[in-house]
Amino acid sequence: MRMSAIRAAVADAARAVTMPAGTLALTCTAYVPDAVSAPHFFCAEYDMEFDKAMRRALDEATLTCRVLVGRADDRAAQELLDALLEGSGPTSLKEAIEAARGAPGEYALGGLADDLRVTRIQGYRWYEHQGTQYVGAELMIRIIGKGAP
Image 1 (cartoon, rainbow, N blue to C red):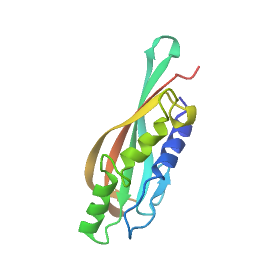
Image 2 (cartoon, helix red, strand yellow; image 1 turned 90 degrees about the vertical axis):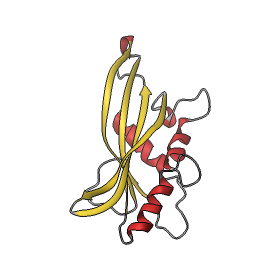
Image 3 (tube, rainbow, N blue to C red; image 1 turned 90 degrees about the horizontal axis):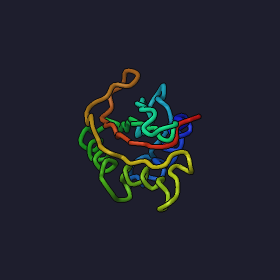
């Protein structure tokens, strides 16, 4: 699996989320940005397990993504974050990202992976990014695909 291409495809999928009325558009990047334009979704670190099947037939990655929202109003920021972390619905990052799984029998992320699934939310807390505090959380995404030759 080519993780740079996978991260770009995950960020593209996250852009499809519908933001609640009255909020700014979600900025999405495939990398950890120098500066955050809140609300911001980005792909961060990942873990890779090689050779889950013989002859490089399957690798498995866990991609950690973060969503950081503003803090102008603590309550409003957490309500926005809660909406983005819902398990389903138009504001759900999980639903937007998993839409990139493709139809049954198709490969995920436009053929970059066999499948993916948002497995959990963790780290709902304040994050510091470049000296600024944001309320945010991490989304853990399990991605499986053919190992690179």
